[in-house]
View 1 (cartoon, rainbow, N blue to C red):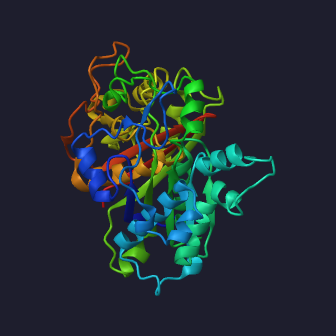
View 2 (view 1 turned 135 degrees about the horizontal axis):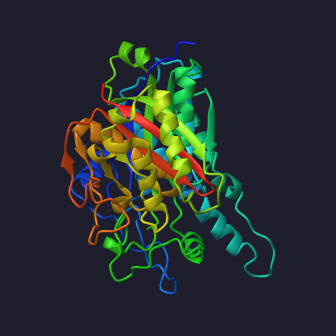
Length: 415
């Protein structure tokens, strides 16, 4: 089978460091931290009292009031970034074949706020169960894709992938494969998450996964720093319009970059800890390179998973060194989670947008909050600490790994 080429023709972003693509890039390029004390609930008694929240967001600026109230925040976020990406693509919905356009989305948790609120309040008063008729549709993850497909009338494949923090990248890989195999021409793909809730913070605190640097939230997400103490929970969404190359060219679309490869693998090791030798991370990057028909020395920049956890960061770096050998010292490495926090199931989408923008601007976003070298990490590697770096970027790889040992990598190419 002759595989078709797949390009990116539209972008959308709603993040802790910017509510549009342009604001997001400005935050990335300038090394802005999105971490601050939690405002969505009283976190006084929680061990972690801060997060990377979306700021100054009013869903009713984008959605009908009644419609917004029927959606969990993670779906609201999805709708907003899908609209930005569709508008950015310049697509005339009246002229495309909607039977060959689909929506494949990712979310690791889905409607956590709705689940928490309904379950905690269902028997207030005399004990009679009281639930909203919209409880289930607000909670289940697939309604993000459902609402988007209904909004734009896309009648191709429509579903949500759930693979923890790899969810959005899984969705992008699925969309990529459907298009290049000729089963779709266009996909709205990406991911959204809204887990900054009592249950989200409390649950990750109980796992000892979160940073507890309450005295300095803005510096708490510090990938590759010796004193990192866990990730910072983030929220938001990212969206890409993927389109078959000839289809995009025929309608005169602007093209940001080409998606040339996607890989998946499993650690098959532990429910939360990465493989100690970085085996799954190595394999997924190898699989993505093979899928793209590229050599290790073709990669210019890696947007790493880089969550700022004691175990995860060094294992990914070990895998990179095994995979790229001497070329690893010529690659820029950075973790944009140092700025956005960890958006869980939406991380891969937001980082895919960051990777595409890095190519567009020929600039590597920094890993901020580096204060102390970790002697266990090779200091000859270019972690792009604290300041963005301009360089020639032709090919960028983005990694996302999830609880359960799920790994996904995608590769973008300048066009």
